[in-house]
Image 1 (cartoon, rainbow, N blue to C red):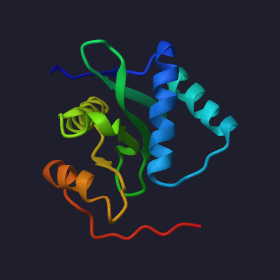
Image 2: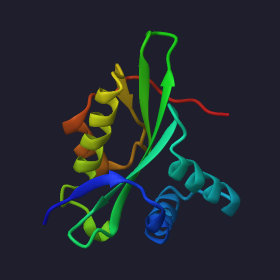
Image 3: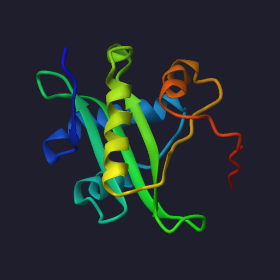
Length: 147
């Protein structure tokens, strides 16, 4: 099976929506429908220097995974940082290299923009994903706080 990663396109909306809602369900998160629609519009618009979305597809070009990426400046660097905000693969498609392909595509985008850091967060108990992340990145010793 070949995995292709490409920018999200308007025709992907029903598949993207199913994947994004699966992602939210995984994290037991609730987001209002209008915010989900706003997120979709931002991804499609590809707000310059800010937000873009990727999807992973198989031979039929139907999305089976997604990645949402934000680029931002840093107070610690003259360059940009890349934040992989959302990453999700359809549960029936896991362990097939799709998550890896999405992360590698994010790295490629970050490198093209000369980002000096690409980072993301996950839950402590997300062991399955963390097994992949441990192969592709270095775990930070920082703890995230929120309000």
